[in-house]
Image (cartoon, rainbow, N blue to C red; front, side):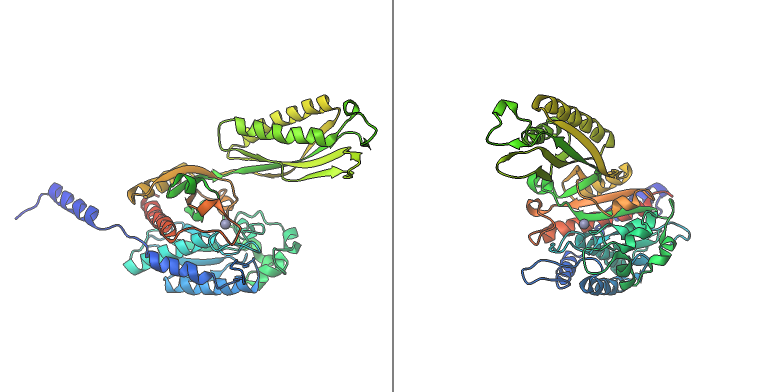
Length: 428
Ligand SMILES: [Zn+2]
């Protein structure tokens, strides 16, 4: 019997499509998630694994062991990041990178960061077990001190300054001492820098830390980017005077002006379509006595959005509204910016790959911004970045009550696996 080349192609493609897609071992992945709870566990069930603590170092040793068992070569880099690498089959290709963090806030949960690390390690195990080699090298990274400044991932883009080494971390050690404690070398941080083109792509799986996916019962979040943040100090000057003798129509009450300003800001932010958020999170009233009309209020304004231009436009409206309120209440508003973090957009092609991977696995997906910061934003200046979110039950995070279901974690790791396979197949 002879088979024509065309028929052979059809037979081959049928055989390929009939093969079950490579998938992760969900039970093994969730067992690894559970093992991590032992590192930094508090009596009330929280995770206190702050960066550079004994618990952090012990956990990194444990994860390094998992990496080695998954066929990765593990090392601590100069910034204290744990990097596990397997070589690719095509010499000279830049690595595909995946990772997240295992450090926590002082009274944190068990999912923030850990899902991305264990998900990536499970992907490496699945590739290892199936004997699948990728064309690209694969690097799985546990970034250090995500919660206290992201200086681990920022070391790659060269934005860490020596002044940061003396800063306290969330634990007992300074950042410089902490990097040494984990086996890094702050004096050689420049050696850990990577340049654009040295990394093919970076993908991070993470819990949403918000309630959108959980509320809408969506299984996978396709992250559009990490929002930009701007913060201002607002000073409202009125006139402090006797609360008993000053008639209501003769007051210059800074707190009355501030109260109206807070609700005005809320309305300006909420009335415009989109996912922007704005917050007054701090407010101080002077002199702060029951029998004195408040003469001075200082408060903070924070606005977050993927579009820095939109933040600017919203702020212009808020400032104009504040000035109008000042005129109406006999007070004076002044604004001073004290913090800015630019938005980091994920790559459009990587967004499509997350969505395609979810669809191919029969999972529902939704595009959304990340309102929280992530290590991925440190990689954005260096390579295309992509992020996969899985639902946080009730949107709770940075809390011992943080929870993501084992099934959701398995879904996320399977999307990560399919995405890395797809990225590996893309033409160079
Ligand atoms: Zn995180």
